Image (cartoon, rainbow, N blue to C red):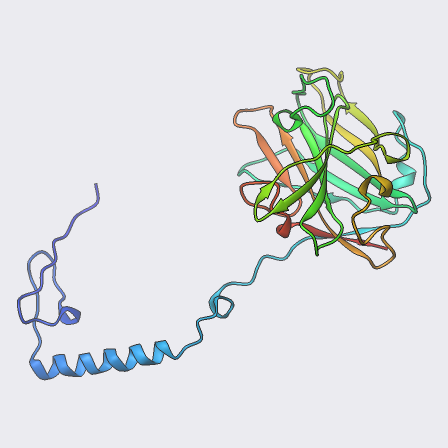
Amino acid sequence: MPAVYSYSVRRGACPSCARGVGSMALSCSRPALERRVFVWIVAGLAFAALPHSPRAIAFDDPPRPELAVPATEDFEFGAAHDPDRWTRASWAELVPREPGKAPRTRVKMLHSPTGLYVLFDADDQKLTATMREDYAQLWREDVLEVFLWPDERHPVYFEYEISPLGFELPLLVPNLDGQFVGWIPWEYRGARKVRKAVRVRGGEGVSGASIEGWGAELFIPYALLAPMHNMPPKPGSKWRANFYRMDYDVSPSRSWDWARVGGTFHEFKKFGTIRFE
């Protein structure tokens, strides 16, 4: 237990002059007290004259990450991943949100005249994926997620989740002052549907399997994101975005983000920036 000291000031003593341990204290004379009161008043007036804008004394916000998104022609993909398609794009690392070592997670992007290509790669040791339907609460098991916010004038963004078994959760999310809900897209088929391919490395694609990693290749059509503004993006356009991973190998679960957010993945004003080349 830390030591506890009882400080006291003798009646008539100046508190700012009191220096003691236990019950010992020193006192000062009346002229000295008057001089100290005068100094306090002057100091208080000087402090009151200082600017009190929060930005004047606050630390700068941490820099937000930025990812270059090269252009490409549209291409098909499937179970056989073609790495040559992705050589022009650079990997962006997701950062663990909890202390300690964590498996590597990364993402890269391309854009075409009709949509966005997203490639995830995640090291892993075990698959936790029992849900076997679309639109389930996929974030409660192993999952990769991409959030896209094309137009900063409106608090509306697109969220997409993909499980190791290939099940998906596409949502349009209006977020008003921290109150948000997810809306499932209507007419989600044909040119409006996300194309996806999931790959598992070093093991079977079944829940509980020992593996070396897993990933996903996605194509998100602009037709699905309409009628949000600032699309299709042009060279030089910028969107806000974030990428996440949840993993349930251990308890409690682990999570990663690209742009650091707080207690919820839906802090969209903290998203990073994707820049279209």
